Length: 88
Image 1 (cartoon, rainbow, N blue to C red):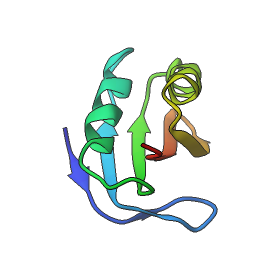
Image 2: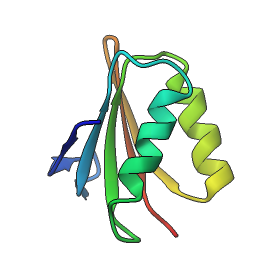
Image 3: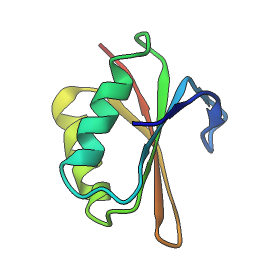
C-alpha cells in the first residue's frame, strides 16, 4: 500500500494520506482504504486512487455502512478518486 501525504479534494480539504489501490479489484480497494483511515485521526481525509469501475458502488456502500463520510468522488478516464473523511 502506498501512502503519500497532501492531496486536495475538489472542495478544498487537504488529504492526510493518499492510498494507491490502482489495478486492484473488489474488495481490495476498500480494504486498502480502511488501512489508510486507520493511520489518520478522526476528521482527517484520505484520498483513494482506484481503477476498478465497481469501486464507486463499493465505496458508496462501505462509507454508508461504516459511518465514514464520502466527501467527493471524481472520475478521470479509467481513474476513480475518492476522498473519505474518518468520522470515528
